[in-house]
Amino acid sequence: MKWRLTAGVVAAMLAAPLWALDEIHGMAGLDRLAAKAKEAVDVTLDTSMLQLASGFLSPNDPDQARVKKLVAKLKGVYVRSFEFDRDGEYSPSDVEGIRASVKGPGWTRIVGVKEMKGGEDSEVYLKKDGNQLAGIVVIVAEPKELTVVDIDGPIDPQELSELGGHMGIPKFGKSQGKPEKGAGKGDQ
Amino acid sequence: MTRFEEQLKEAMARREPSGDFTARVLAKANREAAGGAGNSWRDWFRAPMAWRFAGAAACAVLLATSGSVMYEQHERAARGEAAKDKLMTAVRIAGVKLQQVHRHVLQVEAMEANQ
Image (cartoon, rainbow over all chains, first blue to last red; front, side, top):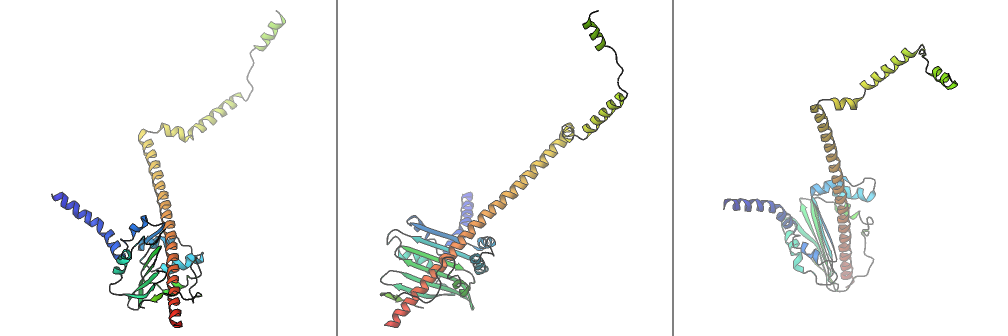
């Protein structure tokens, strides 16, 4: 009986960090979507992995040098992106874990755009620590695609926007397209 | 005595060695003695068993240590390159999606301005 109790305590201690990681970032509910997805991207980089990756970024490559500068103070970068063959392969409740994790103190939803016609739902949450930006979570839910980006740590939006026009990222700027009908802006 | 027997007798006749014969024999003996003293492999096999074992063990430890260090460096490089690729992918996705949201917001604002 005693050994069972000890084994239970040890198992709980071992499982706790993994459980805490998923709960903090609210991504536990998303990982099961990988089985249904046509393409899935799963990036989990904590502080130590970021430091390791940063050490391999070349200062001579302009793109890598920008990324090195951007991630210098970050604590973690987590990305889940799923592309499906058909509509309806995921439900809005799958993203609820993420939303719940960014409802705590310090978090603010700065963008919430719901497109009625196309079904695209975009949200951006910022975490502020005093006057400093301490984290950003981006959720983009499309009928056949779901992407969640969680950047943990102080990040300079200017540095992030400077990546536009590089690495295959479109340049940030004024929209050239006409506004789509049926789009409705959420709270900002 | 036939001609053949005369030739044989002449060939088998006693002759005195040349004057430097003794010097050449001594020089050759000295060369062989000097060469034998410098042969480390022969010395190695003549050494006591404990010394041979210690030497072999030191070589094995050296090889194992250097192999382990090289493997660790290779593993770290592989993990670092993989982490770098993941980071670049993550930043690219983050940038594309933020740009997508930005465009989305601009479209909505433009639409509201037109109404």
